[in-house]
Image (cartoon, rainbow over all chains, first blue to last red; front, side):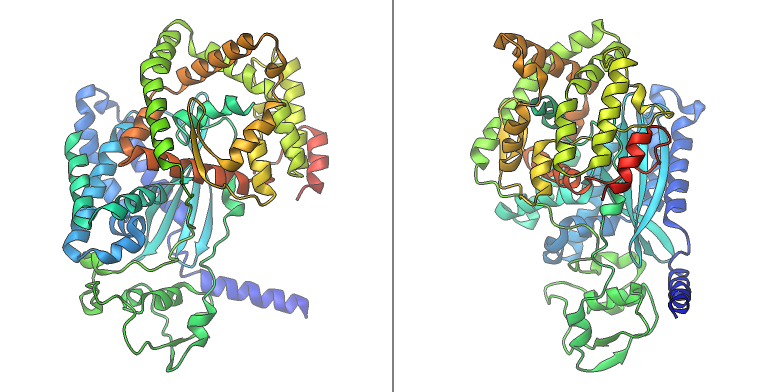
Length: 197
Length: 342
């Protein structure tokens, strides 16, 4: 009896998990990260001047890898519902630019650190977490990508570095700002942030 | 002891990376995996949910429908057909408009992900913000220039060794706190590390215990975490001058760990202070730039650091007792005890 039950539940597991696993999350993230590394390692782009070219090459990879809107929506959380569509569109644009300004240089300063892909954990039917580690000469930095299945593709909506979630970190900041400011003022702060660097 | 670990949190909290690997995956519960019973049972007009996935979630009844798409019980689940759309009228969500190009139309619905809320009360915010500015200036005006000069003179290898040496000295704190958390495999691992690194690592200058062959990972445990494991909440946020981000609980932890740091028993007091300052400079020299990029990334650096600290500490408390993924091949004692560990 027990064995039958086990068999049945295993069967159910396969039945229901197969369609969800269309493109394993880990493979998707790994493929994207490898694309990024390819650009970073390209010997033709070694020069300092090649920075902008690298950024141009990384942009489409980012687009394919991340779900911008999902990332923004989760970052804003409840506040998202108070924005109208135009504001949302602008927010997505601005937030992406902020992240690009901040992280592009960090990514480009890549110095042959090793990246290990450990495993994936299903968070729910269409969400998963892919765990990786960046290994440098003196330390190991755990980095997790949270991905969501949308239109048949796994897209990143959050990055967790050393246990600190990117979207939660920005959410706390936006929440704090929105306590004292209007949506329009928040957008203005972001516009300034994009321009200043 | 703690005040040694805290420079880490003071200047770069998350980006600095410790030389240990934690595997939080096993502790990450998927809260969204199951359906909310209320939504299912509250069915007034029962409709069979068709097995369509993504585009369905776009409908106004966001939450319940979204869940449907993924739920394992898809077939059996019956949902209420909401008489009026759940979406806020202010929200411009129009299901008909839904397409890939108009993803912005989708409202946010609670619980979509695995992330839980991580916030902390901050009744001392004015004081904390002042201390944040103080620490910021301390870093840019004093610590960073000194560390930069030191970095020019001392090669990286030597600085890593110094850092290893100080880390090795904080072994009592990690060991005792592993025991306090009933993490016996962690305690065994720490004991093994201390023995190996002290004897074969030239008094802790090297870290052979972390090598592939021995593979004993550092257990970053402190009394603040032990209290957290016992169920004590963070209390509220405190940003100490020099020591940096902390909370009520972690401040108590800091005091508790004080007694486990050997250097605190050194006489006279200024020797202790000197050693600590040196350790701090050495540590800073290994991660110049981390604090800068953290600050640059933030819209409001004070809030960003506060949140990062709380997330980081919460994860550490959760990750306790999680046995590192690669099974330890050597160190019979640790595997033996490890079997009994939770």
